[in-house]
Image (cartoon, rainbow, N blue to C red; front, side):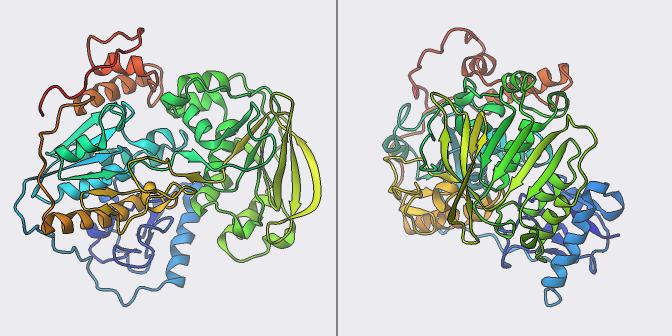
Length: 540
């Protein structure tokens, strides 16, 4: 029976290597690998052996007979991909390239700053080479996994299963965590470069782009990064004030993050409590929310929307909310997948229960001003033309919460040469200079998917290996023991899952750094602020 990929992929490529008949594409080395929304199984050549099912680290592959009604559209997506991208000319077996060996014997050690997907994939690629003895992954937060922990929507539990792959990476010999260490405060880049052969920045892009309109900084006008971090338990956002007392919220931007925000604001809080790891403080506030409608506005038409197909399909299957598409029917007549799915959403009958919450997808609309005295009360919205430029016609929509989800920019750091507008580092194939490198969003900008970080990491690691072979200077000092190690993270992970089990939830996150410290390091007080310790007094 043919098998089907049922969600956006991590692009780990384990399934590609496991397949004995090379029926999963795009494969490594083929156009689109690492940047495509998902991989596809060729129904004409799949032999139904299920090798890919056991190899997939996120459980995304199923036989066609096991698909739920909500997953059936993925069967059509697989077939359509091979109609448009035939692969008859491919070799019948997946080829694994011969592992590169360094000309210098080592041992070498590398520091990776950032414990998100980019940092962990980089560590994994480095540790595939026996000459690299140690990789220390450093992060400002006391928890790893970056955007997977603090950015993926809580109701996307299947996507979060990529943490099982990360757990395998961090279990490798030579991998070490140094969590709760702020580079620039607790330790300097100069210190790290004296202790390691190479240092890699994988710090992501943590700032929202600005709209540049009046009223943007009113209370109740938030960036998506702040709101997403709030409901995901990011320590920096747990005290965020989120006004939920109005009947309408407006989300500006038409990408996946906008859909995530809209779903979370319209989900039944009891369902969130039973099925997700949403932060307890956010769950408690959402129980008292009066929001009935979330309006997503985008300045261009449906065919130009940045929603991915898997996310639109998920919205199509949502039964907890009414979906309204506000667009000229002529703009939904296209044959592309986005237009077709949006057209089907527009034709869906309205729910019979008038109390059903609603998500409105409005196209050809752009914000002009956020209105209010000291806090958000409404948004002035302009009608736009096919080019996304306002036509001059405007209207005012009442809203107590406005969320901008128009993209991200990098975090400027004095340690890296970055573009002042985008925050992206200036580099050559991940190399800032010999011994200093970048990976992830700080390297390529905020684009791609979780799995895109794998191919990005591979390129950076190749540059590191080239420089090690060319003769990077040896460190002049031993790495010092800093921060929370892997055992400390595992203690917190165990505590969170145990609390979740006691409450009938997948996980109950601990977001207070002082309580995290108490769990991770016995003897710390969960109440008193943690005193700043003198990092680096014990050689590793």
